[in-house]
Length: 423
Ligand code: GDP
Ligand code: IMO
Ligand code: MG
Image (cartoon, rainbow, N blue to C red; front, side):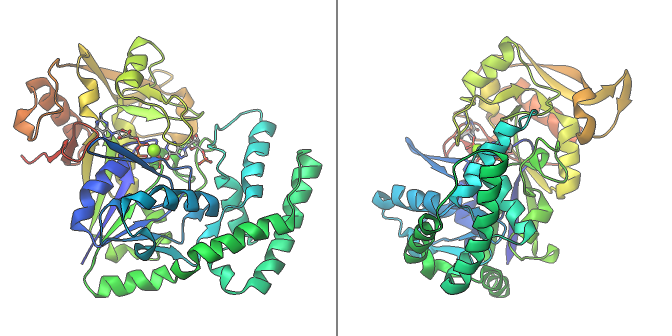
């Protein structure tokens, strides 16, 4: 048996889905463990682009079981849309998709509350407005509705009645927003039960049986280390734990089950939404990274903020997650830059700090080193020695600075633009 966890090592959008798609042939079961439809996970197969928000990115491989784990917050309408969008692919999605009975449901009032709260705040977070924060808040307040609640509709009605009373009061009295009708929400839940009721399982038990049977499990993270509610740049974070702890909590697997933790890392860095970003480049070069890298959100279409590789962030990400190897993506996007900057440390008030100070990140100044760039197109490279000398130097420099092996390189969006570094 093996259990590989693929975690976003930066601020999300590192190319996790592309790597999940690459790892899937060697896996039996692929599990999303946290987040919800705030995620936008892109897989490119030949000339076709698929964007997943809830369904694990391994679904394109026939015969693989895909699980929406207990740590995910699930929007029933989004799930229907996603399953429908795969209808013409003959992938037999419904027989291969399992939903944890403990996954919480995102309902329209969560999305309304997300919007209302953003409007209300003076310091906006720039959420995806997918209802993520309000749904996780309900989970913690113990007033959420879970997928497994559809097994007992009478009890579910009681739970919804209570929850909705609170939500409607908040929406109306605090935010002056329209309220929701009980029957309209029940319609959504009934539809979810009709469409997906058969797939709802105790997935924790299923996964432990799979471990006993020697199956190969792949855990798919959403978002990334620096968006983690505990370890990220709070409050400019998401409301879950994309880091390793979230992978265990969000599946029911334990730390002894995990055999490998792969940190998915862009060769530069991006961030969507508000919050501190020390290596952001607001000038021409940042704009060039955005255009070359097509850095526009896969969920909201917002332009991603772009900047230079941040070694200190990566080092901390490796420590927090126990990253055993790195998959470095989007190396091709750096083609044509005369010089490539790498932040190898920070200063605060002129003094060096040798860690990632997430709570005062807005005060740090990055300390840059500049490496020589390259002009050659690397998308056709299929082994490390195919890369131009300066690209190899860049990768080796990152590896040495981070102190963790870069095992896989990605030099384009498609499956074939991927190879093991070796040596
Ligand atoms: P995720 O959220 O981490 O799965 O990443 P996204 O799908 O939001 O964003 C990554 C984007 O980069 C997608 O459009 C991918 O198709 C694309 N991508 C992934 N790896 C590479 C690569 O090595 N080179 C290029 N050019 N694009 C890549
Ligand atoms: P994937 O899985 C990048 C960001 C939002 C916002 C903050 C909080 O595709 O990497 P939320 O809606 O979660 O309450 O928003 O988190 N964010 C992401 N940024 N990639 C993501 O997912 C993200 N999911 C949320 O932009 O700043
Ligand atoms: Mg994304």
